[in-house]
Length: 405
Ligand SMILES: Cc1ncc(COP(=O)(O)O)c(C=O)c1O
Image (cartoon, rainbow, N blue to C red):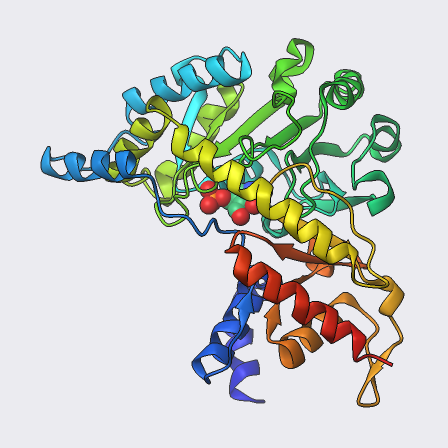
């Protein structure tokens, strides 16, 4: 028995069965190549390249000086939860009480709290695909059964109410989706969500986790719609949001939920055992972020839109790629299936993963294969980087594809 097999045997089935995050894996590979001296353009991670706005940093410095350095209440400081209540009212016309808000160490922990609080072994968790990688990993950790609802680029990767209805069974407990969506950039309209709400209403035992972390990065010109706005299903919806994307605060680790009270209480209990509470200083920064002048965030969104338009033009020029115009977030999710079966130096490329590894090795460009997002045809490209790098990246992608036979 090899050393690796021996130690695997000592670990739990739970961790042995868990997939490593594909985005983190790709970014690790690109960092290794960079360390070897290669000029890699890494478009694998979902991280704004902007710095956190100054007014937020100032609030954190003040928090340290004022002694906000102790354990906080498990679901977060009351003043931050109050600011979140105000935000939900201001931006989403949602009425939550402070008790319905739980603040966590990133939206990722918020999602884990909810899923672990709701899912029993064998419960079905609906994932309109493509979906964010961690939804499946967390649902599986809770021993839920993930049920993918496939969509394609031809419908802008959006699940319809009709399609959703076909996948609901007596065992369905939860649906998880994001709008604006990672990885596709799709944004659900008010009418599309209204139709989905009508289906959810028919199934009172079904809950929906609505991940709105990209809420502000929306280029449709239409106001963001939260699923919880449809009051007839509000008691079935958990709204997740966070600070990483809107305020360029990925490293600060702060997210939150607005939820039915019994779910909020369960999440409070859960994180009381896992992390005690999110970081005190980060919480004070988050409070300032929500209550302050959000101009820096809106400026970032304008910049993302410029980049989206630039990259769309460049990707469309690459023969064989199927590209749609994403309405939000900062990703393209383009279909490369017309290249399946083509070869490089005699080796066939048959999957998006084969193509992403080829583009990394030959073009020194890191993209993430669609497979880990529940898709078999696409690659995800993050455009949260400078225009100069994006132009060079698209050039390398084009050259990479042109070398295939
Ligand atoms: C759709 C989606 N939800 C949640 C998260 C997690 O955000 P946080 O950094 O707040 O944990 C991400 C981060 O990439 C995301 O893309």
